[in-house]
Image 1 (cartoon, rainbow over the protein chains, first blue to last red):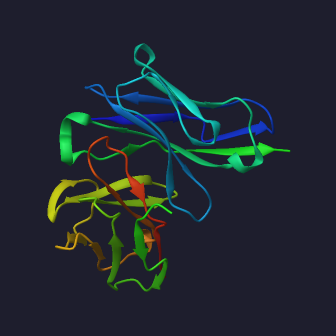
Image 2 (image 1 turned 120 degrees about the vertical axis):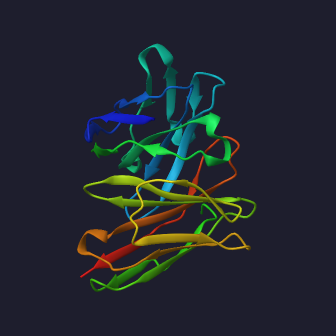
Length: 116
Length: 112
């Protein structure tokens, strides 16, 4: 079984500061990993994905994440926070070996607040 | 716009009733997934269909059922509704190659 742990249900940063949202995964096979963002009253939007290519993955809106197998981590970072980054962020894992029966298992989410 | 369409956006009903949520996937996507999002349970996978067939099952209650039709749209049927079924229900679709899913904006169900 796969699982995802997101450390910190709420993170606050000042505008212009570094954003770091933590995600650790558990998987018996090399996983695919994803970060999604959810703005109020909207669905989830894909920020970036890791699918066994480059370990440093760049996504939309200046976000990036690094897959570290030794630490079973996939932390999300952004060098400089913007007010528009305030949202809830979800880390997710899937098992590539399951083929078309693959689904995403989500973490509990991290609410990011950006302070002026 | 993800290309995934869900209706209705909001639904208010009473305990014991039955509702149907509808989802149209992105053009070309064969897989449809249903997720439930609530404050206490977070995002829970309910069920997946692939090209009309049930492919994977998650934490779906027996009172809930789903199907995917030949035109690939899907419906999630929730019956004998309880207060605890109040949640945001998301549909997502994908092609299965890299595993990423594209989510609709959700159907917010309120059971009174």
